[in-house]
Image (cartoon, rainbow, N blue to C red; front, side, top):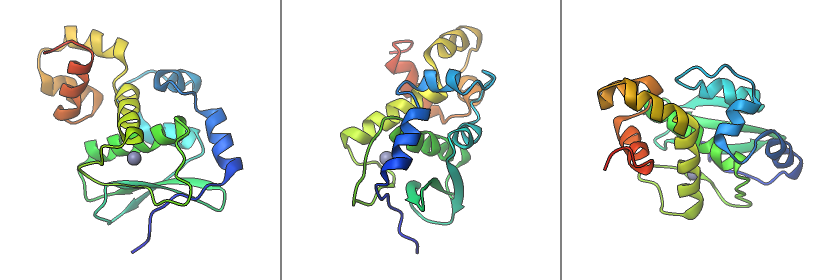
Length: 169
Ligand SMILES: [Zn+2]
């Protein structure tokens, strides 16, 4: 089994940071993608020069920097909505400039309660479910399932986001 890890390679991190504003919604706007939903996470990753690779590993995903290129490895064994969230989570690590020098960075469920993991999750939620759009959709669609399907996220992720924005209790 391949070990998923991240090795610091300064020019690559620098390039990614320059391409990726800290704000997830700003990233979407900056890449000049059309603002259709669900967000095409893989197209965004490609726009940032980041590769996506499917694996049969048990862990959800990981971030690897090898030979000057960042790759997100994602398990094809997990549900597609979770794959999307994990890709967004890894993009969040990159956009937020999290560094994992000389450590292995793997993302498994349930996640460790580390600050960087919480930040990457918050970034992913903001990226997949931007606040403005959530507020519009919450008025237009009646059920949680419809909303989750609109954003192509799990109902758990949708509930968490609605609570976070104070739309539901
Ligand atoms: Zn992580």
